Length: 276
Ligand code: NAD
Image (cartoon, rainbow, N blue to C red):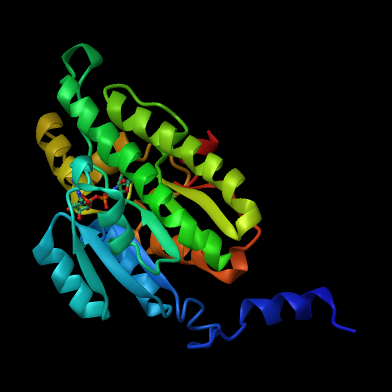
């Protein structure tokens, strides 16, 4: 008699017609698509998915960085401005997403201003990039995932998708919306082999955050180390930044067959910040 453990491991490492997924290559034969994949968290996700066997499409507005990374990991690129949603037609998306079974919605930007001073165009653009574009990509990729009875959608949210922060009205609104969209996708996709989850990091060591550290050190006239200890990490239990590769590992696990029963969830990776 096959016990549950045997059945699960047999499923986990089932050979597809072209590739055998193994412990070290759990994503072999999978095709992944990572928005904002040229830098920071997205680049770490690209490297981790590729190291675990996936073919990865780096989708980014920055063609030079995307090309360099795609060459490094043996992937491919899609140059795209995800704010220009009028160009994201059904045909364009169907071509770009052809054969994709792991979609990572990661591209994002930040603007900091009190609401009364917040430029409405900035608010609109951030919502477009960080909520409407993920919706359009999910909408476009689901039919083929349903047909394959397999799909993994991983949305890079933030602790600000769960807890608000002053002066980040657009970012917080977009991330809260993304958390909701991810759950709806999970509910609709569950019967078709498609899972949808968020990862919600705290401060991650990316170019974006390194610039914030430098800026704050100048503004407050304190060393950069004190920006971390006295401003950014005061509420964190583990007093360091998250490394991009750590987010990459979480995304890779959510993309794997091992996470087949994980859907509609949001995984914080914030050193305990949101537990307080
Ligand atoms: P990053 O600036 O290092 O990378 C963002 C990438 O998105 C870049 O490659 C950029 O070219 C691309 N991009 C920006 N605008 C685009 C557009 N219009 N079209 C296509 N691509 C575009 O940023 P990061 O820190 O790696 O952040 C990645 C994601 O992680 C974002 O969604 C961010 O909100 C989220 N996040 C970051 C942190 C952090 O501390 N860095 C924490 C939580 C969540």
